[in-house]
Length: 229
Image 1: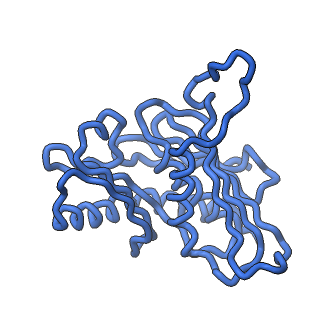
Image 2 (image 1 turned 180 degrees about the horizontal axis):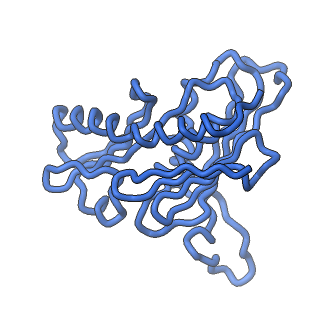
């Protein structure tokens, strides 16, 4: 049965759907923010993987050309090429955020695959992708201490801007992504133009506060979806 939860978040509608696509996965969600849409799926092996001394988690972000309405220019080759640097970095950002919340002694393979289905040329896909991965894990039954949320913080004319559009990012002197649980910041990724430590700390604290509605929405979805074993 399809479940849909939605909230107004930082001036745009954030919607999470599950129960319609990829039903053979342990969990699958669609997240829409503005007109940007991503899908996240989670699949975990039921048996232990022998001969490994690490937690076998794989996180991959896939950016399809059709998401932006692009057809590859080659006359002969129309298939997707190798992952872009942006795709790899988005996957790593999500990995760094979700990995610490797993049981590191678990030896069952788990895959988290996030796919960009539609990009509206206004809202960046990385924050919706992070939220999608969190929502899928939250309802998957995996041994994971989430959910988590995330937000991008920019600064224009000494004022913080949350989840800035592409145009706002071009004007911003700060590009900060803050991700974490309700009470703890887990991952920070930042670049800035002569940003003081005081301003950076304020931006991190503000980001932690602004991500809370996304976490609340995931918790609402988790309550409405039957728990998996």
